[in-house]
Image (cartoon, rainbow, N blue to C red; front, top):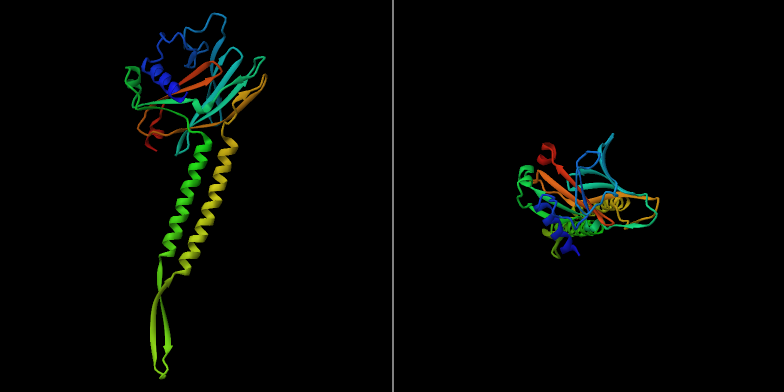
Amino acid sequence: MKTAILAFLFLLFAANIGASQSFHRFVVWNGEPGCGQHSRAFTEKDVIACATIVTDRGPVSTIRVNGIKLAAAFLDDGHYSLVAAQITNNTDGTIGFDSDLWGAAYFRTKSGFVSGEKPIIAELSMPSRDIIRGMSYENRLGTELGEFIADTTLVTDVKIITKPDGTKVKKITQINDKDAQAEAERLGSVRNETLTKEQRRIRDTALTAKTVEAGGSVKGLVYFRRHKEAEFVTYSLKVEDTTFVFLLPKTNKQKNN
């Protein structure tokens, strides 16, 4: 399944969202009320609309296809590129999606995308469970390294020893640095506390739902790798049988972070 998604993603963007993709239902967001560009798999009966909602945190792009609406905001948090998504279901039935299979294609420049250059890379989102697992692994390595360094940090211990004949001599030995061990334990405790808070934040905010009930909505964050060299990104977010496509130029501020 993932291979098929990536293959579609590559073909879709290599063709610059070409009209020949008539067997796929996809809509490209461009801010125009009628969305401007979509595949020929739609009929005249389909209702398609694009809009921008201005919020205090920035613009939110929306695409509505019949009774399904996807609202998305695109953010960078320094480590990942984030899609803050909300899916609203105004149909009479349950709709399905899998954000683990949402994809992104990264281009070095917008002009390269327009001229048909291959993307730097096309890949799927990063499931939050994998991010949390990776954080635990990195934290464990950090803790083990700190403990190893503390255990191998030695200090000189000098003792005065009285020999049987009454003479006194110095006995010099190397022992573990208890202060270093205590500091390693303190840092490990701080690291674990920080990790727990960050993992809880990701769990609480990630988009993990797979369905939306009739008349309901779901929202959350979807994580993608952040490629600093890419100045233009295309996101492919499939809900039910329609792929919602967003073309996103990166700002200089984001690029230079």
